[in-house]
Amino acid sequence: QSVLTQPPSASGTPGQRVTISCSGNSSNIGRNFLYWYHHLPGTAPKLLIRRNNQRPSGVPDRFSGSKSGTSASLAISGLRSEDEADYFCATWDDSLSRWVFGGGTKLTVL
Amino acid sequence: EVQLVESGGGVIRPGGSLRLSCAVSGFTFDDFAMNWVRQVPGKGLEWVSGINWNGDDTAYADSVKGRFAISRDNAKNSLFLQMDSLRDEDTAFYFCVRGSSIGIRNFLDYWGQGTLVTVSS
Image (cartoon, rainbow over all chains, first blue to last red; front, side, top):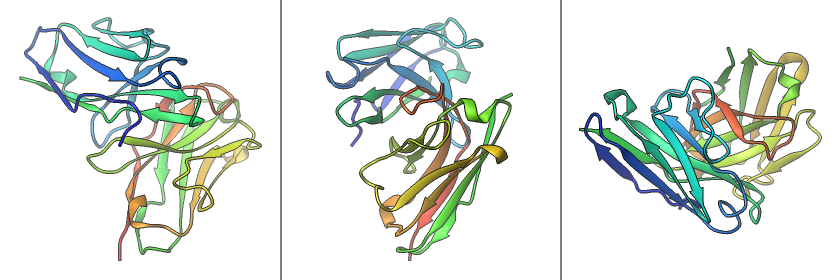
């Protein structure tokens, strides 16, 4: 069971806006930055959002992140077929003294 | 271009040992901490171990403490994971992951494609 909680699936049609949630507690999301990653099975996961809401260079501005209290969310606007992938969140947990992850959300573009 | 390439995965019997390697390029290796993260196929991710830039600080998940050992060779731009007393539940894809700075707590920025370890009799 993952320390951070994500919905197992999400979907949308091309052009739509979808959001993926990530919830934790005061030892992890409540105290530390939240990161989002994009993963196509068989390939290297890619950092999508760092420090709650910052996009690394090369990440389109269609992707945005936010955090409030012990929850965070990833928003993808102008959905495209190539956005179909797994998305997972991660943060440091001060109580466990390790990196913790969400279970991942499989995004389907209908 | 940052590249991390894992090797050493395979099929191993319970109780056996395996050593994973990660060859890196495209950045100054000893400026960054490194990590191993694993994913059981179809399941979530689990951070396994981390090592700081010069190897004098390491950390492990409770599930592998005492069985796995992380190390690095900065002269050879390589990261290693020695896995002993392997169990069925260690079956997973193992990813080599760079930390964003010298210490273990720095966020995970670049990942390799992973190598599959299968523990089975």
